[in-house]
Image (cartoon, rainbow, N blue to C red; front, side, top):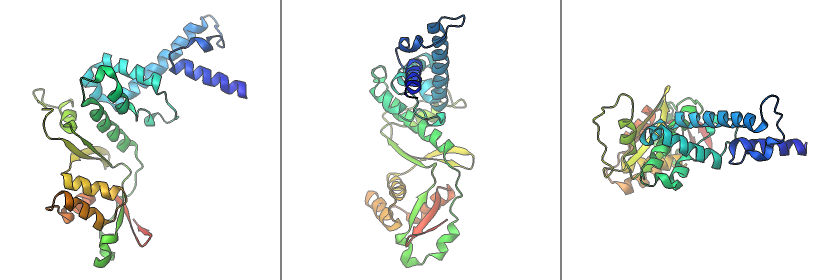
Length: 262
């Protein structure tokens, strides 16, 4: 069994690593040289993973062009091969890779565009849970409202960027106005990404609303989250923000006195 595991590990390294020669000796030629047969598999695996990354990061690909994206994907695959059989989980560290990838340093906004696209992919594949019925809050006494702790939908992600990544993303959609100009020195982005019905969407949040949403996602009680948001902006409107969360179907349960309601 140990020999089998070693052979499997060597074959995996040959398919995904930089040196395929080590395992070629274990491959039968059968009319085709072992190295050539291995090259076919390597090419197929590389193409499959590259296409997977292109599907997850279409705007990143558009921003750098397909040839450069294929080069970056090849380097990423070699350094970060899949570790899970669920391929939709692959590519979560691509943004961090781009941040360190020297040929991308002249595109400082690119990693955050990738982070937005990964959040959208993650939202698409998140579990489908029933949204919280806001009428259940009517069963909570006014004195207890501040102690409510909400559970957000697993598709929800919150991200910030110094770059206008939301506008960059929209400007690179097929139906976008080709004359659209995005000013990189424009306002930073604070975004909520989530799946609403069958669509993955995102929208910009004010600094106070973002702080509120993040506090709830971190498990802070409603009263604490509201005070955090008010510290960012005293004009923060708690009722409006709660209505938006329920409208977005972004909440799935709440806890009061260790009893979860959903």
